[in-house]
Length: 122
Image 1: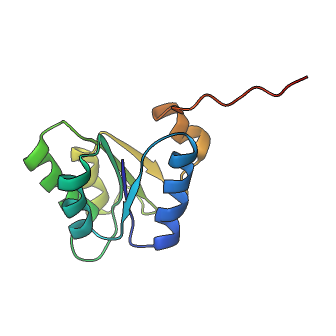
Image 2: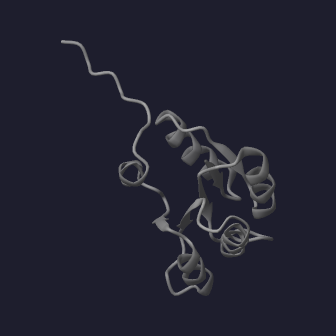
């Protein structure tokens, strides 16, 4: 899985949530880094911020779809309103989306934990 956000703390926090649930996660801080990671890491899912400098999330999603069709699940993450044209464009190519800040319980509905948490002993 790849988490892409130009705000490093946001990327790290989302990556940590996913790692605690058992996912292997890499982070990128712009669209170009994410595209380079895809070839070496071969993710099954990319969570990406829409509003990034350079290759924004909408362009990243278009390029991923062009290169990998529907083989990679795309999840858009945004703090912007749906009226922003980039948000609307990303929603056309993304499979799912979340508003920032991403709530862990909602993320787990889409990406359930791979690790089973031990039950507390009585």
